[in-house]
Image 1: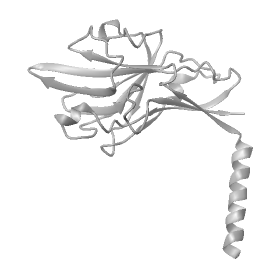
Image 2: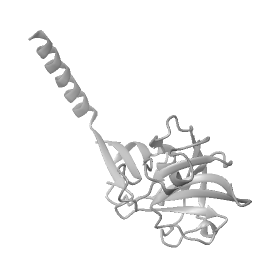
Image 3: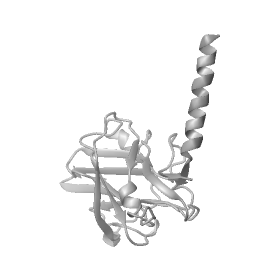
Image 4: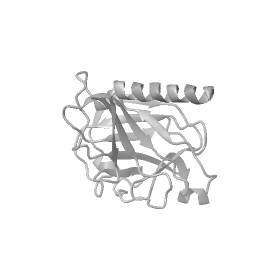
Length: 210
């Protein structure tokens, strides 16, 4: 009986805390009017906007070096202009059925520290490629390598998304690339086109106060 009372008190305090803080979470899915694409060399003119996988990596094949980077955008028109944004997170999900697993061990591998940069111009999923590389902002955010091979990435991109007055400054999405584009570094993520992946497409989670 005493334990039941303690549980009730704790639940009451927790509910009061959440209500008092007034936090709101806006979730924007790239699968809903957003976009993602892979930029690749040595095939710089090839568009990979409809890829079911986002493989960000560096490796060699037949004497050629291959480098993949990725771009992702979100439709944030439904974000209220009055929203008092506190923090913003880019959520990227591990791809558990990548075609690469036929030629390598499943999972992220090597050093997978990431660099996230802000895109500063309009781009189109079905036409973008390495040779039409979008304009990128000067700021860079660095994130540590994976800790487990099937890790999802939750990346704090607040600094790239909002200005000092807490207003939105990023409307065109993000560029994602390896910090060290060296042979054997692989990140395997799910794209918005991959309906068979259990984890889902890239998402932008915006935390705001009422």
